[in-house]
Length: 493
Image (cartoon, rainbow, N blue to C red; front, side):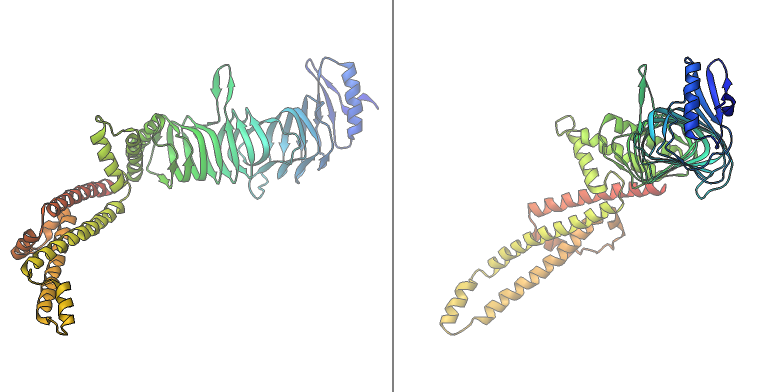
């Protein structure tokens, strides 16, 4: 075979074998051996400068330091059971997808994507898929294009990558991303992605999101995510995040929907430029560490500056919850701890408008039942003293044995007991209701509780009943006071 069949190009660093689809892998291997013997100290590259047929099966590209491919075919470019190592360059791509199936990556594989013909496939301009790879090593992916990229990765480490495109959609992936930067819109769907920091020279560099990037994650698990220079927009839905950092200005929107933070995010000088901000069903598994409390305080300020009142209340409540968990029942913290626990119990730190009303109703019923039982016991004592000549059990027994009934005495006792019980019920209901509505009792009519009922109450009450009603009134006023302030804060009245 003549050397010029492969159009050998020789320079100081590389020897290039320029082939085309007509050259078989066996011919390329023979030529490689000849070049290697002739130039043992030079790197050998393969330049497939014309169309190649797809799929490419069982080819060993790992011996070449660089493989350049100009692919001018409109169908998918598929590599099956091929071996790779070094640099793989796609100078011109007009296919819908580049697919690596059952391929072996012997070392770090750097893939550079050049010009992409916008052929408008279903999901984007180009789909890059790593599927069922036998030996997956780190891959360095470099894309600089205005096109839309769809990326699917299974058991792949994306390493030192720089992806700049109009949008990259990461789908159906189970992968690790190390020390990489994304510029443009990032959409992540149905993926489990772990962003891992790479430490070099004691400098930890992580995934970075460009200042004009739009980031979207849906149904994902994310670890070690850093948005340190702000972003155009960020959207997270049904996502679990571990080890994250947010800093800088979010210019368009920030949406967090059903997001769980396994540990508190590092929050720097974060800003939401406009009011397009939403935190809904967001859970923080750590709410009491110093990092968590500081982050809630920073997010509270960011929401306040963006006039996002719901977020302001939400993060202020989380901050108070974290502080409350760190308080103790010792002398120095006792009063603050007591107030914190009360605020948590009755209002969930200002985050639940219904909670105070439910507790008011519960306390009303509880106090009413206790008061009523105590007043009934007092009724029995008063009635027994009035009818002290009657011992019902004895009276019934004697009169039964004598075959006669003292009906008049028993009826008098029963009517008196029933009358006093009904009075106690109505008076107790009015008093507990009045105590429960706190400051709203100003709207009640002046004779809501008559003088006779007040006199009757004092006649039947004792120190314990009076004390219980006083405490009930104080607690009710406090709950109403907190509730009014919650309404004012929530609706900016």
